[in-house]
Length: 128
Ligand SMILES: N[C@@H](CCC(=O)N[C@@H](CS)C(=O)NCC(=O)O)C(=O)O
Image (cartoon, rainbow, N blue to C red; front, side, top):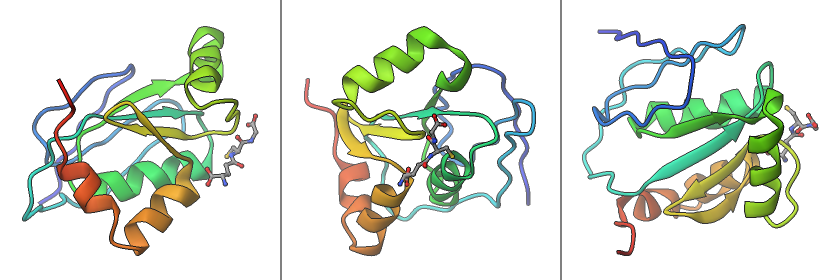
């Protein structure tokens, strides 16, 4: 089954099943990710349209069924400033945060996954 869901702006999805984001050509498609572990972390991603790294990072999250909040920072100067400040100078897209902690870009997210460190991070609840 493929569930399609389109959105234009940042939205925190709570269904946890799949993410489809459309903004110009910035379309992410994928099969519903089925998780056998809970996602309790808050995931945020600053993206730019037409950016393969942003797409790959979102695809990895979507393939795991992880809900995330997406900020389209490529054409939003305020969000771009916020992204750079929160990532301690990181000015490439995407920049990813898990429970408010800076994780890095798409490569770092994939490295964490390859090392088995991503799922435990996603299962962590945000400190109150
Ligand atoms: N190693 C980085 C590479 C990210 C990257 O090079 N992103 C490009 C866009 S796809 C970028 O931000 N270029 C500079 C810009 O667009 O201002 C990652 O994995 O996230």
